Length: 426
Ligand code: SF4
Ligand code: SF4
Image (cartoon, rainbow, N blue to C red; front, side, top):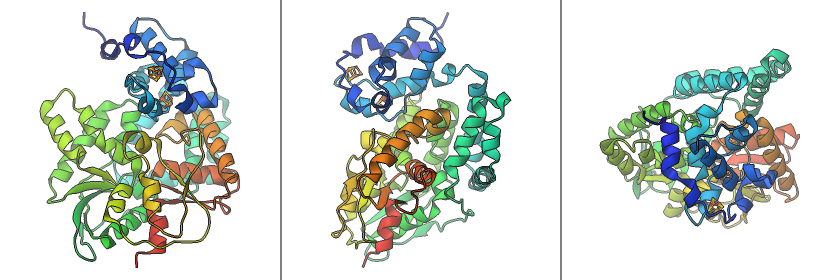
């Protein structure tokens, strides 16, 4: 009899030999730093995965420790044997959900990621509904209905998270936006889904900055959501479908030197496209060619070395998203800010993750809130007046956290492109 694919995958990895239990990962794991319990550490999660591989049934509490992995990959970046617990947890995430509220929420999430997120018009509509649900108090009311259980709290968390930022009407962009001066490079621009629906001015600012730095920007009209939200929740079918649509959409354009996105989580996921097609050498090769050309916006702008002026006075903290810090260009956000002579940016203090982490804030609102509160509390002590970030999820979540603590007028959260574009490029 053939083994179930999940068990076969875990057996192949064989954690018993690859994890030396050295513990280097403990100090960098946000969930372990929040609550130092062994099953909630990378090492502990690997032990739980090993139990599954041995055919043992996990208790609901043990399953929760596994599912509480943020997928930040901080552990992978320090692990001497190269183990990647986030990747392995993702492979078992869907089978882990076994209570009714979790199953209903997983279905709602999967449906939203399949039917709404990749369609800009539908996504803007969904965001507007969720925002109104929170503003009218309806989501709070739903969260108190006993028969909805944890599902009500999760829906309330989604609505609250999205409420401080108003979605904008979807408008088509021109296909080619020429460099404003001498052309130094040609970049195909990946807009992203939430980024384009809720933070379109940040994409506008990124395009303006790139053009004035000598980059011709091409916006492929057939592109869609990168698929990261589906991928991180374990829905590989949708993730592959969306990846394939993007590979084809960008193949239609040309010529261009690089693919760039101002949404850090999208950049990290676009780079991982080859992993989605391990079983298909032809598609994997195509995805590899695509992935090697992906650049983060901050990295590309820094390489173009534009002259930037200070947007506004004040202390500027920068919040790098975990995925880019641990899988892409660590330090690129600080480096691009350092191009502004008058600004002395400093890293925002946090436990390793703000808690946003794709759909994590909705699956585990309590853990996400604790991580967010830790960052907001630490930020207050720094005297920061602006927090700049490169990722839409972190931006929306930090904005939500500041609004929740009534600090939104004291500390502003901005996308790095909007922040830099306010100062202009003389
Ligand atoms: S750093 Fe790697 S090898 Fe060491 S305990 Fe953590 S997962 Fe295991
Ligand atoms: S991916 Fe992040 S949250 Fe998950 S085990 Fe590793 S460090 Fe901890």
